[in-house]
Amino acid sequence: MLLNDKTVIITGASRGIGAAAALECARQGANLVIGYSGSPTSKGQVDELIQQIEAQGRKAVAVGAPAEDPDTGAALVAAAVEHFSGVDVFVNNAGICPFHSFLDMPRETYLKTVDTNLNGAYFAVQAAANQMKEQGRGGAIIAVSSISALVGGAMQTHYTPTKAGLLSLMQSCAVALGPYGIRCNAVLPGTIETDINRDDLSDTDKRQYMESRTPLGRLGRPDDLAGPIVFLASDMARYVTGASLLVDGGMFVNLQ
Ligand code: NAD
Ligand code: RM4
Image (cartoon, rainbow, N blue to C red; front, side, top):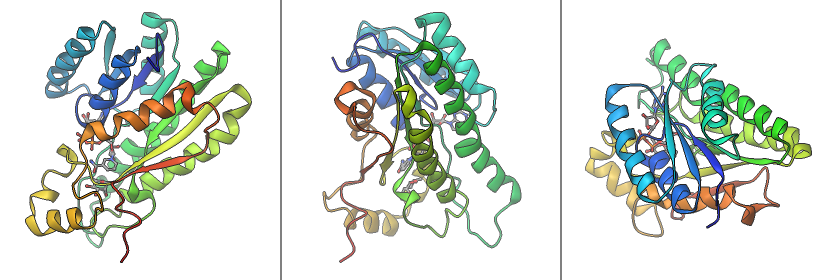
């Protein structure tokens, strides 16, 4: 039990990487605050996830609040305080990637992507950090960044800067929050099959290219991220801060 009786907040945890991480945190003994967009579809998925968490003998509450709202972080923290008396781990996972070409990128698509992936995250991390500082027992903050923080994509010019921004945010927050014992790290997933890239990977040529670039021979699954996130959240990583962990089956280093 790496997270016994810890309280973990995860944003965008209705499905995909966030849901897989939430379930593994529960298996490791944590109680969960599940952030989700507030849409009816997400609510149904969250209800199922909560049942799975409760089947592990742990507790979970859901907070429907959009990631782009600067007040969402405070709402998530308030739920953690109300139900579990505080927060030990904050995982910023919510994100969107509406694939689109650069020269005709709609202004709204760009702004929505930056607001959801980065601007909301900034205020959520700030809210979690203030609560952790007040509690005085340290904490762990993890951002789900991306391999796309390090490399570009013609259809991701709105998205990759948000992922680089999250990585940079964790580096600066590691410096700002180290004195309070709050560790800040990033995970950088490669290509993980989820709803975010379902359309993109329905192009067979693109999918085969992504697979062939991956030395471990397959695309990722959401639960491939669960172990790395739990590790960074746990005391096993007590001297790890400001770090970034690629979880990409080797895709990044595969040049030739
Ligand atoms: P996903 O689409 O399955 O999950 C995204 C989650 O974010 C969902 O729960 C969704 O409801 C939530 N979300 C979306 N908009 C939201 C909003 N406005 N407010 C609150 N929640 C919102 O995809 P995923 O792959 O699990 O993505 C999770 C994170 O992982 C994202 O930040 C994504 O950028 C990152 N990531 C994914 C991959 C990949 O290949 N799948 C690679 C690198 C990084
Ligand atoms: C990731 C990476 C993946 C893509 C997802 C949407 O950061 O670029 O290849 O499928 O984003």
